[in-house]
Amino acid sequence: MMKIIAYYLPQFHTFKENDEWWGNGFTEWRSVKNAKPLYKQHNQPRVPLNDNYYDLTDKKALKWQADLAKKYGIYGFCYYHYWFDGHMLMEKPMEIMLENKDIDLPFCICWANENWTRAWADSSKEVLISQTYGDRDDWEKHFYYFLKFFKDNRYIYKDSKPVLVIYRPEIIPTLRDMLEYWNVLAKENGLNGICYMYQQCDFDHTKDSNGDLFDYEIEYQPGRVKGYNPNLPRKQQQSLSLPVVIRKSLNELSLKLKLPLTSWSTVRYDYDEAWKRILKMMPKDEKVIPGAFVDWDNTPRYKEKGSFYSGVTPQKFEYYLTKQIEHAKRDYHQNMLFIFAWNEWGEGGYLEPDKKWGYGMLEAVKKALNNSK
Image (cartoon, rainbow, N blue to C red; front, side, top):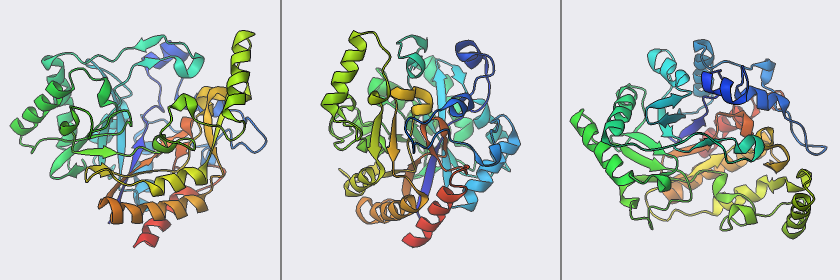
C-alpha cells in the first residue's frame, strides 16, 4: 500500500514572536484572508470550507484534521519543526498532538533549519531569528526533544528507524558531527539509529561529501520542476504570462524609476507541464523517494512578487497522482510518497476542503489510491 505523507505547517495559531514581528494576533490566516486576485481568473483569496479558520492550539482542530486525513487515505503528516539553539517556534500543535493519543494518525518531523526573515513581507534581508547549530550540548538537548516523539507509537519508521527530515542540510556547518552524534544517542536509547532524509534540491547525496549520512532524498515538489526548465536557477525560470527578457526589462525599469514591481513580476507556471515533468523524472539511485503536489500559489505571502500555477483542478490532480503512485512503485520501488501539502494555505498547497473545490482534492487522493490498486 502506498503511504502518502503530507507536509504540515503549524503556523495557524498566535504566539509571542509573531505578535512582535507582524502585529498582535497574526497567524497565517491573515495573509490568506488579505490575498487579492492578480488577474481575472486567479483563484484568490482561498477560503476554507464553512469559514473554518481554525486555531491549531485547539485539540478539536487537530483531531478533525487527523480524522479527515485518515478518512481520505492520507497515511500521515510531516510536521515542520522550528528549533533555534533550544528556542522553538510553533511547537504547540505538535506537542498537543503528542499528548493526545486519540489524535490517531502517523507522523514524522521535518526540521525547517532556516533563518526567519522579513523577505516574504517586504523583500528586506532583516533576520528576525537566526539559525545557528550550537555544539554537542545543544545537539543533545535537541535529540532528547525529538526522542519523546520518536518513541510514540504513531511515529513513522522506515527501515526500522524513526524518520527525521532535514530541510536544508547544505547550510549546516556541523552536519556530520551532529547527525553522527544523534545516531549514537539514538542507539543508546534503544533505537536502531535514525532514518535521515532531506528535501532541498540544493543538496545531492550522490555528489556531496556528507551524502552518506542520508538514507533517502525526497523529491520535494513542485520545487524540483518549477517553470519549464528545472535545471535553471530560480531567477532564470520563465513566466507564461510574459517572455523572461521582457519581464526582466520591465522589472529593471521599475527599479531604476523607483516604482513598485507590478504584476509583470508575477510568475505563472502551467500545472500540466509541471506534472508531465514530474512523471518523467527517474530516481538517480535506490535512495530517492518521489514527491507530489496538489497546488502552489504563494501570492498571499509575496503578492505581485509571487508565483502560482494555472489550470489546477481536482480531476487533473487525481489523474496525475494516480500516475505518480504507479511511477513510485514501478520506477522508484518505493511505498512512500511525500506531498505538498496538508495545510499550506499561504502557498496554495492544501488538501483541506475549501469553498471552491469542497472536498475535491481529498476525494482525488482517495480515488488515486484506489485507481493505482
